[in-house]
Amino acid sequence: MSKLSIFTELWAFMRVRKKWWLLPILLVVILFATLLIFAQTSPLAPFIYTLV
Image 1 (spheres, rainbow, N blue to C red):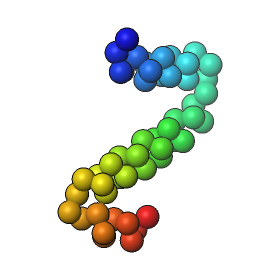
Image 2 (cartoon, helix red, strand yellow; image 1 turned 45 degrees about the horizontal axis):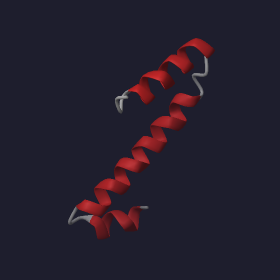
Image 3 (cartoon, rainbow, N blue to C red; image 1 turned 90 degrees about the horizontal axis):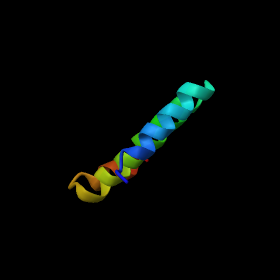
């Protein structure tokens, strides 16, 4: 099972069930997760923590 299968199933669910209100929520969660990952592995971490 590939890692992208979760995203493809979620996309298919939103497309079939017309749950487009989930898209902004998922984008914010992905953005926040990316920021946290970047904050842990970057020398700019102290500055990012003051923003969050």
